[in-house]
Image 1 (cartoon, rainbow, N blue to C red):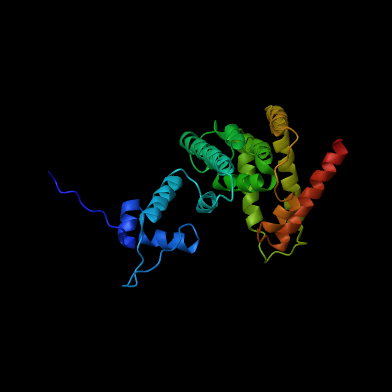
Image 2: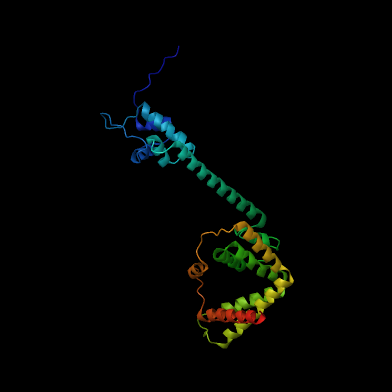
Length: 280
């Protein structure tokens, strides 16, 4: 027969931690937050843990593995809250985590199919652009879509995508856009905002924008935009996401444009507004 070991009446914190599958540091934290009563010290000044302490440590570990928070454990031990209430809140938390994991998995799969960084944009945007050749979109195009999505939401960026689709299928429009971008970049702080070239460039921007709109309409991209609005209206169900207003978002996005470039943008907007009014 093998001798039967005599179990100790109390053990040190290291032994308690080893048996419960935790660490002395964790046990000390349980003492600090009131989850585990702090035992008295023995003659050598060290804490000793008895049977009741070990039982609670084992239950703490089991509840931790189930995802129950330390605050909820304390409430459960103190019987200050119904266990069903704790479990209901835990189920809600886990359901939210599951939904987030599914969203992240969908994003990873979209990145694999579409590629990065386009795949990082909302599905509403990537679905409109995923058919384009890899070199059809410039980094600046994706940057613009990223900012638009932040300010106007996925629908706004998906509508803006029509511009980049039109330029991808009309090389002359893309070439003109590149030329105008270079001209914009030349409007640095050395250029007088009232220099005649600023007004001339604004007129060219307006003409290019009108040409883009004509191409979008001719290619039927405007009809696709209408479908987007219908899809988003149906999905929204009359609810709006809580987010900053467009004014707040625009005011928080720095660009560092020169005075000349800012005036060029303002003049372009006025010219476009005038054409829209004349056409209505």
